[in-house]
Image (cartoon, rainbow, N blue to C red; front, top):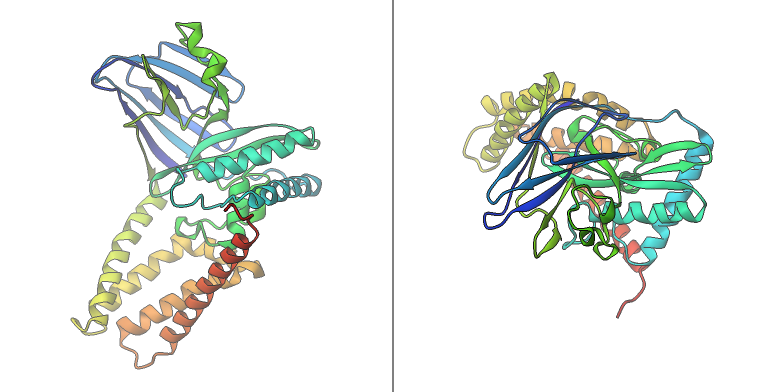
Length: 373
């Protein structure tokens, strides 16, 4: 997969500031090309797992970083002993957090990426209790909008592995999470790798004393704590270290797949518009509404077809894989004007059943949380 990533940070208009930014570098599953900074850093510091740069910005100045990103999935070589040990570790840490009231969704007021970071830190703590080394890895998932995410790099007795505890848990309940992006990783894939649709900034936490450009040693005192860069932090005189207020981060997929996805999005809009008009009785079934759905379904084949086929293989995910077929059968029955309600009825009943089961699972998880009253 290829992406064009742009980061932009406008400085405050009333006072100078110092921006600390993690710079992406080549690493397994990620290659950086044509990286361009709008201004050179005052200082750059490279340590294992991360590259930090600092920029002195005058009031109302702006820093921009553009780069071409090539990503790929990073499944490690399959090792049964490593798989089992990491799986046991994640399940032990997640069970402990669930007892404390942890929610993989983060809750309504949670910051993006907070639930993944909390789980990654819990897994890292459990790893340290076993005598393993490790660190948290911070990055962004490249979805419709970049989303902060966190996972782990662990030094296990059998070697170093990257695991994503959050997706390991989430995909057990939503195996079709990635289907819209043409991917179908299994939950087990995240024990020793990830799907490759992400940009990696670096490892954390970073102690303030390790930051470059510290003019005053007091700035890096232990009272300042540790930092988790997603991918930056700002220091302003009189206010200390703060998250950026106006950061902009965008990623645009490029290549043939991106072109197909763009066409798919256009046909999707036309198909759903036709469905709505037919359902309201404003246009007759057939004609352009049927052609729009046919184009929509045809473009789904190259974009999501291979992923859907892979999703269909494991019995645990088969139900999620069959739901799109029921949906399109109901869709086709409406826009084609078929005089039957069987496809619509089957889809609606299946949809209600799946949502009821998800609510029941959430209720059972909530029932295991301690009473905090």
